Length: 214
Ligand code: ADP
Ligand code: AMP
Image (cartoon, rainbow, N blue to C red; front, side, top):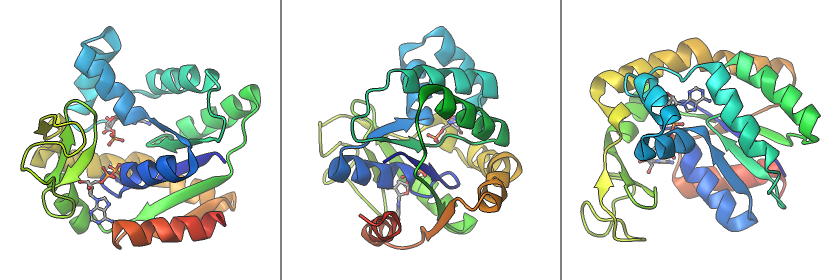
């Protein structure tokens, strides 16, 4: 089963992807996580990505499509994959279609998590991420047991560089301008499954399972 998880920043894509990974053994492919890894390593790609990410802009399509092509080419998903945060533009969606043809993959479900912008700002400002293992918490909705410390590995929790008030504003504008058109794109193809993301994390997951028929 190969799934695309769509939705604005903070809609819960990573949270739901984690649940799908642990229950169904799918592989999560998060372009955001891939860029953050490169930034942590200070690689050439990381330096370029940071330039865009820190201000809330998208990384250019050609760079993003290249890293997805490289990742999908590994073909190491016996149970399928979840694309989390890709595609984010119509150009990326079209490239993914060619890539799937070329590599022999089929996308089985395109799920859009729908959450109002005022709720997203609250979620994003409270998001904290483990520096070591990348686990995600929320000061209000999913606090760690010890403040500032990851429950899983004891790593330090930090706030992402693109979660300042200004960057969040730009990210939401970027979403509206460049990513929201994908909702029409996939709706017109009859492929989009809309899910109310403004529910508890477990209820969102139940709805996803219902739609997938698993
Ligand atoms: P995305 O990957 O779409 O950017 P995340 O899964 O990282 O979003 O979630 C953003 C923040 O909101 C995180 O701090 C997460 O713990 C929290 N969160 C995710 N889903 C929910 C939910 N259903 N209700 C409340 N908070 C949530
Ligand atoms: P995320 O972790 O999905 O919120 O992504 C963090 C940031 O990485 C985004 O705000 C973009 O700057 C960049 N990014 C992630 N995925 C993509 C993508 N598919 N296309 C362009 N930029 C991306």
